[in-house]
Length: 435
Image 1 (cartoon, one colour):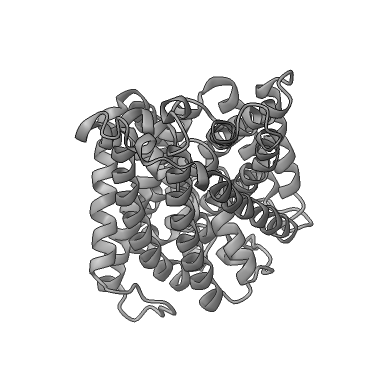
Image 2 (image 1 turned 135 degrees about the horizontal axis):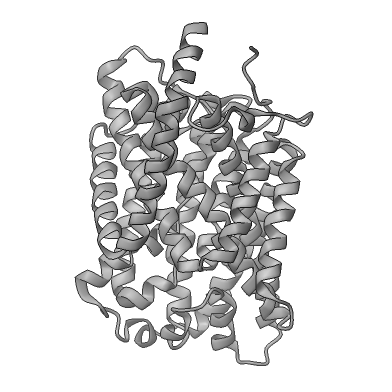
């Protein structure tokens, strides 16, 4: 049986665009819910902790991505380190992260569009966005990545413009008012929304099989991407929090245009302009997440965790069945979920995957010291240890403050484990026997 494969066509700028584009919607919406949990200063503290987590994680994760470039990403790393069940845990966690992130972004697309066209139904716009980017991804990764780079550049430019427009209206008193609301428990409760600032950047790993020169270009894409995102996250949060009553931004899906409205006045034409341009940031992430989610479905199905039909590849070298399933799950989530719940569920999956990936890095250093590592984690073992510790703290906090969603996460995991035990393990043994 021929092993399904993907086409190599991505370069360093595509990877920067994918790294930033996967995440940049987090600067446009979702994060402001953290203010409602912890206040501006409490959420700033949570964001600094999470920024340290992601910076140390990406510098460490890049070692795994370049040593074992595969569409399976974290599943592949954990499988090599801990065997089939380690791969299962990492693969399931990554699937939850990437499959539930698109509907959250689609929700925000709908809300941003209704700022400009208030009579349009937000839910229908969200559903249309999921379908549209599912269709785009059927045309192959090269076309998707070109589109991703273009809209990501526009989204970054708009965030820089947003910071410039609001800077003259920044007031320290506005930002500091009720800044420590919620105390230490509030900081822990706000962690999922700080994670949303950066969630998804690791999705570049799922495109590593499609990179022309992964040893050189993957580190460049990852490191330039995380540095860009840290600057944007802190800048956007400070700019929005200082222009007026930040509490009015803490429960809406479109804080950027509302902050511009607070700074410039209700009738300023920039208000709708920012809402319209802001859609570029959301669709950049929606398109990037669909790329990551479909490749993860493809890879874990190829490894036996999911039905083999998901490994089908069309004439554009796109995993079309995986793309269609990603689209269907996104539509179902739009009907059944809300933005904050979907963000939290996605964040739980992400943090569990980070924890397992860092454990895999330590294990592979011992188990396979001769593995070719084109990029080695700097300040080893400190960076991966910090990332692992902070991932564990974030996971415990999110489970404690979201028991119902954590139960849903575990229930879905148990159902997938039953399938994996009955079908996936045998497939893995068969594939290893043929190798």
